[in-house]
Image 1: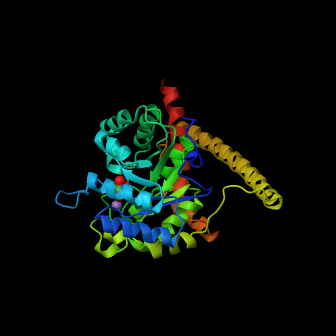
Image 2: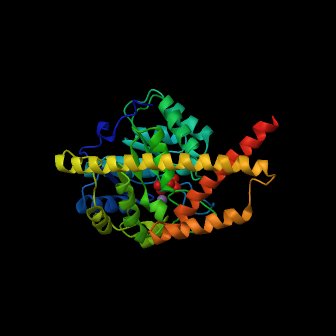
Image 3: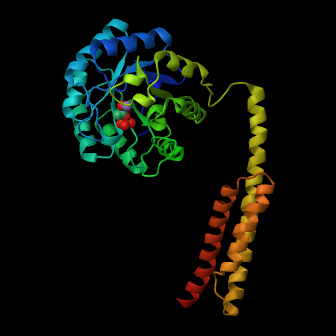
Length: 364
Ligand code: PEP
Ligand code: MN
């Protein structure tokens, strides 16, 4: 998928740097949609407006979206404010209608990404459609393969303007987030498809207004290419996702406060300093690998010795000792205890594997 294009190639993207997408969770009335979008446009320069027309709600009986009528309103907003628009599509009919009313960019929601039948239906509806970018949210469950699979299906339909949207992952466990970010999953996807633009949706990750800014900053620090932030003229009275929507004024504050960071620079002095620090890291990593090699040699020696003396490989007392001592020692140096515990667990697992492997080879 090396020919997935950058955001700059999208005709709706005018400037470089991270893009911003904002608008209400749902289109509720023509007036609410127009007024919200107008206030956003008057408050801050953003790339495109969002609004949900069909809403996948967890339980029946909640507001499930305004449907086709809302697309007419959104098309008016596009015309009147001269701004690109984006909405969620969840089946072939949605795709057809969204394109009919001039929606510039489509997105696929988290509850659709989990279902390959749904994604394939959307992909089939997109065959032969040119120049319509598609943004694909992560599935609600933490599964990078499922996310990638959805991207592959849309790519298979011939779409080359694709972006991922990271909106966090659902869990039974209650945390301060509505959907746990698990940033490493987004990073894993980016590692598999390095040219895939990634947009963060801090609204669905946070679930509350106060988390929008810190989550946005974290995404920008991780080199995300854009933010999608739910914005409503009267958030408290929104028909869906009231607690996470912000006013247009607050949106402007958030976007102005987020410190934009670049992934590279042309400044020679900065690059030289970075190179020096990186070669230091390279040297230390070499030493680390060397020391680990030496440790595993001793592990093998101990393995042989235990076998010769009829001793078990795993000796709980010794392990408990290592597991307590090392992190404590590391904590004194200011290293995270949790990190050291995980590291030593890995080292210990590998040591056990080596020692039992010797025994197995002998038996075989
Ligand atoms: C939304 O963006 O309003 C939405 C329904 O998001 P998600 O698919 O991430 O739940
Ligand atoms: Mn929402």
